[in-house]
Image (tube, rainbow, N blue to C red; front, side):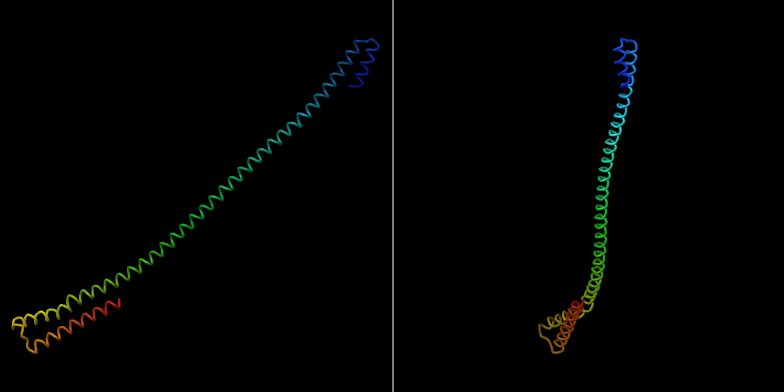
Length: 176
């Protein structure tokens, strides 16, 4: 390019304008060609920089997205563990309640049995001395409230039998 420029200067000095224009044209073509190569090189470098920046932004976005997904997974795992913990606690509590219910049912059955025994004693064994006492009182009333010794002894025996039965009931109730 510089040679053609010097030839251009020589041709202008010699007055050969036709050759001067040709040398100038060739110099410009070479200059433009070199400029195009330089521009192409700069465009290539700019394109590489642009793509690098674009890739870096994509990598940053993917990294941020991965961090968000990891955080969400962590929250899901923690929530699941808490849920499982509550389920286990509820299961254990349910077992404890079930055991307590069984114990209460057993105690209720024992108490019901004791109440059945007390009801039997009251309806059968206590009724006899009470009926005897009432019958002896009716005899005493019939004799105008005068009682002989035999009637009073029978009354006393019936009262003692009633007292014994009541003490048996109390002892039976205190055992249960």
